[in-house]
Image (tube, rainbow, N blue to C red; front, side, top):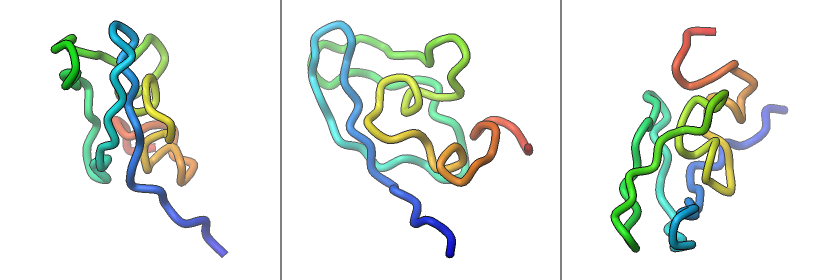
Length: 74
């Protein structure tokens, strides 16, 4: 039985610590995220495909389903 996809992730800003729960896109990468606390523009860490994989409590939906990343057709 396939595992259910979690569509929400809480992003934590590494600059100010602000936390915000967001819905993750299922059909595109989110490369940038502006912190609602301090305005810092977050980008994925090297080796991560999106801001959810870098700063979120839950990885993006493609990673959850076993795809290599949300940015590729793998």
